[in-house]
Image 1 (cartoon, rainbow, N blue to C red):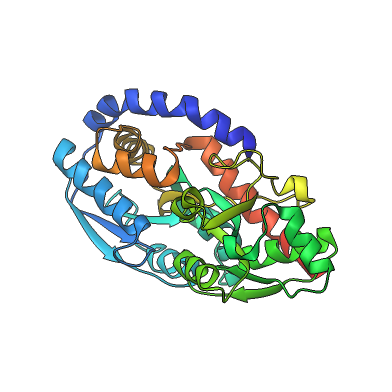
Image 2: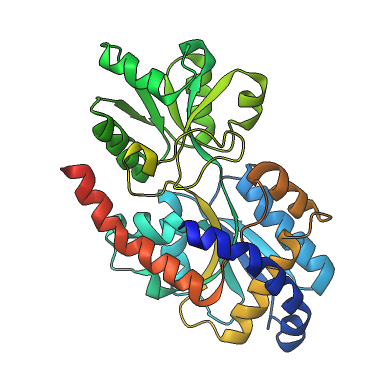
Length: 316
């Protein structure tokens, strides 16, 4: 995963420079149904709608946004699989939707039933505590647990629950893992003192800056931008990555000209800080992350295959 983040920086400029050619080579044969796997009004939904608006303004493409939420993006994938694959139906999900979530849904679908188009941004996933705990480091939390304190750890997905369990296992501590719906619920739980710590995907940044929250560790294989000295998951003995990556996908068999044109167009607007969506991604997600083509296919396939290893590790 870390190599993908490095390679993506170079890919942004390449994808952006190609957009004019790709857009000239392909035009949508009709309005594009934009399926969105996130609740209306949130940061991810806003990102998707701003991308659509910018592409309508720049290229004249027409988008019809539609919320299809539930089961971590699997409901969207299940509805999209039989839709036209000519570029007139795409969906915004997270990579986890095509990986762990699709694997555990056990509905007979794999990433091969879809066309991965492009990623747009990653999140700053952290293991975050409230300042009221008095903890200033991950070691403080471990010491509290070993001293007999119950540690209530909030997560917003089954996969993150598995990772939280592995974090506790690697440190030799028991964690009371509390599953809630959405990162906002984890933030609210930690802020209110109903949870001691939890996974937060960038939403913690203002609270950390204000001193109300503490990034105890990165929930990824790479350091947090805001707290680069905090340990990463591999530092904590967990050989998996909790990063959440936003991406677009379509039904299987999408023609290359449609896939490449849509991918390049999205990359151009998300990497342009002068656009509303570019500014949003820079502010909320630390900047664009563009992975496309064979590299994206390999990432999605690997994430799906590694789901079995994650489940096995968490069951031992």
